[in-house]
Image (cartoon, rainbow, N blue to C red; front, side, top):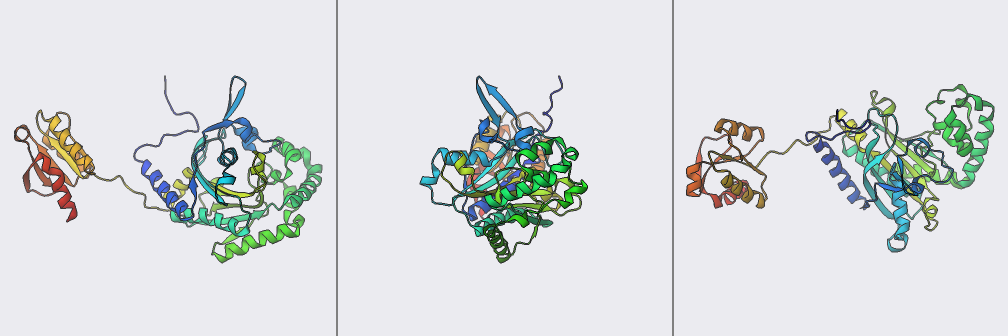
Length: 421
């Protein structure tokens, strides 16, 4: 039997995990500055949480991992927003929290799609949801949080792409215009776009298969169907971004991959020439009817999500100085039958807050010194059989010849004194 990770999954090995710790620290610091609180929802939910009525997204129609237990249908979460809003409604947080309620989440998501660089079937996503207040300036602030995280990871080759999907009236008029426009071309559209034509023709504009069809260039523009209120809202978003110094490009083809967005939608993409099809770093938008869908009050929200695999990969490409594994404070060498004494000193050091390791098997002195060197130990303690009988140790600073004799119970105090100096 050849045991391997399933296709589209991966192991994070010890020499890679520091990169994850670094990005998690950046996220923790930025969300703290912006006053977001962490929320943790289940890794699977009732399928109906994700598969909403008449949803045209590929995620819902082609990519979900769904299973049944008896008469119940469950789905591994393919995205984070739905679970957060479900929790917000279920626990009636709209009545107990000051609005806007600001949440962030981080964890594994699951989508059955073709694995490629920066895109796996199990992937890790960080996202935020800002719920309860509808404000163009809040849209800009939400974009700024994601932008600041990307910049803090040393990724400078980025741009913000932004668009508006307008209000309900704008989108209804635009949907009708798109259906009328694409009707003569139905036989040239891919099978997925046939479904999108009936469910949500805006999604045809985002199709990767039909993207280069000649007739796509002549499709109506949403900006021609915006109401005065929708235009004013979007203009205020852009002015707020100008005020805080975030550059952007208006992309009228940007509709995002999920059906619940209204008004502002955005993506931050890499401008590196080698980023290829995986240029999007994060994206999101505003939603006006999502909270009430799960039984809550009529309430607007905005959010975004970042795939951490892609974020880490881009940070590495741009030379971010990821942390290296920390060295040891103390390595304890044991010579002869002294394993219990080695363990005793090591545990004493650990309980005092030091990073310590000791040799608990029979090995030669030279090999143990090599281990201490590889582990970048600052101090070395040596215990032989005579020292064990006397209750003492030989202590030295790594790289120095001189050593001194200490009582076993004095080792931690001596290391503390040296660290103070």
